[in-house]
Length: 121
Image (cartoon, rainbow, N blue to C red; front, side, top):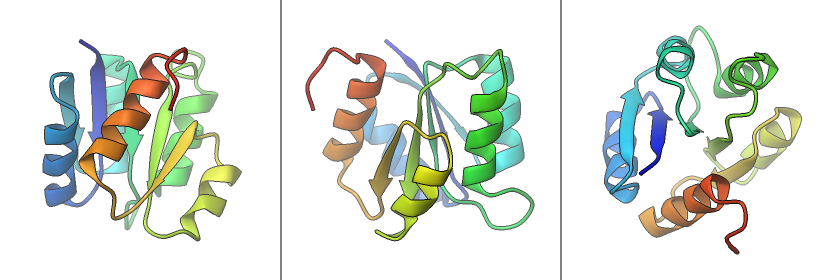
């Protein structure tokens, strides 16, 4: 069972993502600051990052994770608010992007492919 951090400002999205990612061990964070703290402390196998209003956006959070020598190898799945969001993911160092709204099965499939790179999509 993998350790997955789901970070997004929307509590409904965090709850839906947690349900979709069962049976993995999922921890949630409501904002980018907590996402960085929990990534450093909990050392998840995968980080699922949404967009955040306010102090730090998801793209900047992703880049901080990827540039940190202790966390940089952790795969990051970005949750983008629209098809235009794919451009932001390409500018950051996120490993994959899932456009919102999404189906829980799509999230689970992408998460599994990042956790087990040998699995086909």
